[in-house]
Length: 97
Image (cartoon, rainbow, N blue to C red; front, side, top):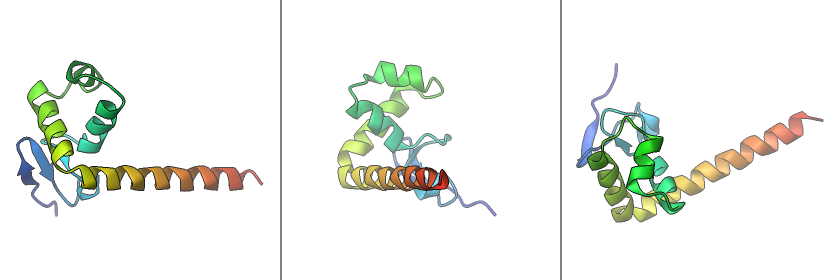
């Protein structure tokens, strides 16, 4: 049975069965982390919208605001994703032998 998404911030929800409980833009599977990564790479809100045309500028700004107000949470998620990517790459490398 699906759990109800909890609104944790304007346009931002968390649900245990959506993206591992990470903060997402409401009614999507777009993680706040995904928006924050684009922001950290220098993308403007308009450029982020081009990458995610399903999002409104209000949703993008809400995700950016959440990311700035919850910097430790977002940084921890980014570190976790990097470690996961490294493990996958390592496993791929080892599978060649």
